Amino acid sequence: MTNGTTTGAGHDAAAMGTQSTIAVKHLWKVFGPAEDKVIGTPDAELSREELRAKTDSMIAIRDVSFDVNAGEVFVVMGLSGSGKSTLVRCMTRLIEPTHGEVLLDGEDIRKADAKRLRELRRHRFSMVFQHFGLLPHRRVLDNVAYPLEIRGESKVVRYARARAMIDLVGLQGHADNYPDELSGGMQQRVGLARALAVDPEVMFFDEPFSALDPLIRRDMQNEVLRLHHEVGKTMVFITHDLAEALKLGDHIVIMREGKVIQAGRPEELVGAPADDYVADFVRDVPKAHVLTLRWIMRDATPADDLEGPSFPADTVIRTAVHVASATDKPIRVIEDDRVVGVVDRAQILGAIAGAPGEDES
Image (cartoon, rainbow, N blue to C red; front, side):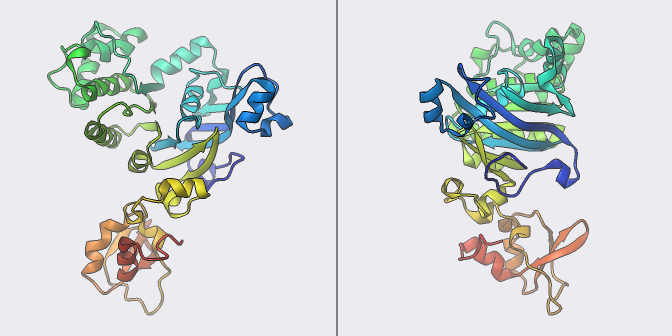
């Protein structure tokens, strides 16, 4: 990934030989009277405080670039004021970006006129917000069917699809309830069903579970993972919670003051934080719960007995601990049907115990 900021291992679809579903390129959002005058000038390098004092303007998104690959959960994480929610709104043009490109399968969403943008929102992508936005005077069935109604689908078609989505998110028996008869978690399931009803290519989630109780939030995270496994949608998920990001994300970017500070797989952020800011975020994360065998493996040597057990390279370390404890042979690490390295029992147990050097690549 390239973004003009400090990053960890990149997430560039072209470099990986894959086709990105979304490509964000040099995206900026400036609020205030100097919106069209800042980019490309020395003022763009000022801190937020300095720019506000000089121009009464603020840079919310600063030269952000990344790729989202088809079928992955891509998480944008940051604290309040980091720009993460502004970013997702710029990606869907709920807020107009100041500069840059947002490509959906190669089509620049920024160049879409009002009619084309409506088509994209009705057919290609959908959003799930923290505030459910349900229509209180309509039943669950009608709330889920609403985007299909807007799209002009017949009542028979939209109700059939809505009932299928209600069942998919685990709300069987609640189609005729009204939103105020449901718990917060159930209401968010209605939001999920409504977003899925249009069969979007991409789903955007803007901190959808922040207002939920911890246990309900965990259940909803599991629900997103289940739905992702079942329907395979590309998902862009915004959160301020590191645990949520690590649980859900195939790739994660960490933002601060409108910039991407680091980007990569969860194991890359935890194992090799780009700076002190990211290191502080991940300091208390049990590394063996996030790092994979790929992270700690070494090259095989002629002395290694390669008749031992094997695991895929993306196996999380703690998953292999029971097998490692039961054998003296090195564990073979497999990728694309070939051995790419080995891991000794001592390495795995050391990582579980938090031994020095466990975060070394």
